[in-house]
Amino acid sequence: MPRKRNITIIEAPSNLGLMPTAQGKAPGTGRAPDAFREAQIASRLRAQNAGRLDPPVYHPAIEPETGIRNSAAIRGFSVRLAEMVGREVRRDQFTIVVGGDCSILLGSALALRKLGRYGLVFIDAHTDFHTPQTSRTGGAAGMDLALATGYGPEVLTNIGGLKPLVRDNDVWIIGNRDVTDPARYPAPHIFKTQIQMVTLDKMREITIPSVVQHLVERYDETAVAGFFIHLDLDVLDPAIMPAVDSPMAGGMNYLELGRLLRALTNSDLAVGMNITIFDPDKDPDGSLARGFVNFLVDTFQVIDG
Ligand SMILES: [Mn+2]
Image: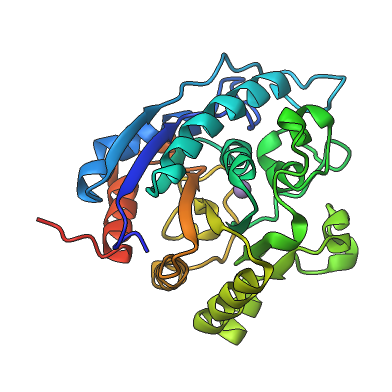
């Protein structure tokens, strides 16, 4: 639990995994760490700042060889991010990586893969299980979970010869709402994996405490050294969090997400968390960033003052 451990923050302002905006520009998600810094995320969480990793230049074109944009840049960025994340996890810091888009998952997953066998709790509106063959965007930010579990081109699945970065049977997806009819799902190869999927409807049906209890029991049985949380803010209802890349109706409220994160981080197995896809261009007065920081302070029960 972050309460018992110190929190460290790493800034990973990469938007290499997203499509360009309608104007052909790099998307705003790369500025999320600046927006959260403005909202004083580190001081309010009583967290140490463990630095920032700026990404290489963003190129909007999809590469014909891989079907992805910025693949070499994402690979290089992931290797360097993994060094920073690994250093903090080894120091037993609860390591929060502030993205950036969901492609930062590859850096965090690589860090943990180098340290041993770790689970991944993937909290996102979408499964992010596209491959270049199924993706309509060519963005690694819609493929990150597939890439981390070994599906997709070698340049991003086999970083450092360590494919898969996470074993699919060590992955839990919680709270997605993009699977209504599995037969028509655009990334159907996910159903051939061992990934546990607890959709938002399912989570509400079986309740958050029992989902997390089941998950922690499974992780205890499989003898993972710990687990990492990937939080894409689009898991929240766009009525409360509209500043995301791909808003989708429905979603969790803050009460539910708080219960989920608190239950997960109550386990000593939780070693850190990514925060992805916040877009400050859609939060001109900074109120959504401040609201999210308030939410984290409440959730982690940081003594404010
Ligand atoms: Mn995502």
